[in-house]
Length: 310
Ligand code: AKB
Image 1 (cartoon, protein in one colour):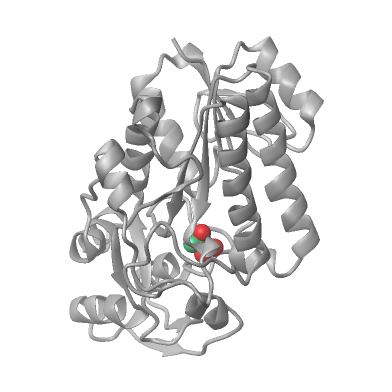
Image 2 (spheres, helix red, strand yellow; image 1 turned 30 degrees about the vertical axis):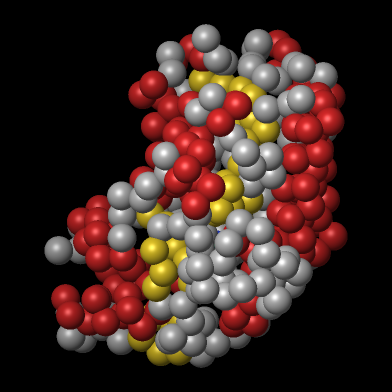
């Protein structure tokens, strides 16, 4: 029986992952932790400093934790405001987890990577698992380095670290914080509050996206797969669907003709332009049966329902 710790449990992915895992893991075997003081749920909450190896080790040993979902990170746009802090948090918290896995204190790890590992020279459409990668953000650099370190530890120390390169995540509950794809959530909230949405990307910027329920399914599916089936030791490409700001704006304007979107692109445009338009995820499909349930239309409908906007 695994005893599980989620680091970054109060974030966009963490809140939904803790809910989903609480349905399949015994209450006593699930532990949450985040930079904020406490959780919004009744699940057990640990105050752990992911940047302190000793603190992490103590909490993990004291609670017999065997499996860690390490979700804490500074994302692409926010990361550009303080590159050194972003590098420090994203890399050193990962190293702490990797070293605990190397010492066999932790048996299994999930760590999310991102489409931010790709750069201007990566192929744009149906971007494959293996292609040139020169990320232009410190977040992307940290994710690409992290992927390579995961592969190194898996191959050299026989650890079991699993990872997925997530596209932009669309969720209804906890908003994302500091990403380039955040517009795809913000626009729904502006629509709901009857405000004009000022979009920081150009209307035709097409990016890969995924709905939160698919994110959670993908993590659970990958973690359940026998280790020997996993050919990718760094991080798996997965795809949901591709969309642009204009596509969501049109859907929302169809519901309410009064809704207005203005486009004033800022520094995030350059980041978005360096990322793929769409992703090819053949290895995830073949190795662990990945298949998305939500396409663009279904995601928009679900967001409208979940945010009570009908
Ligand atoms: C971001 O925009 O930084 C993230 C990501 C694609 O990893 N949502």
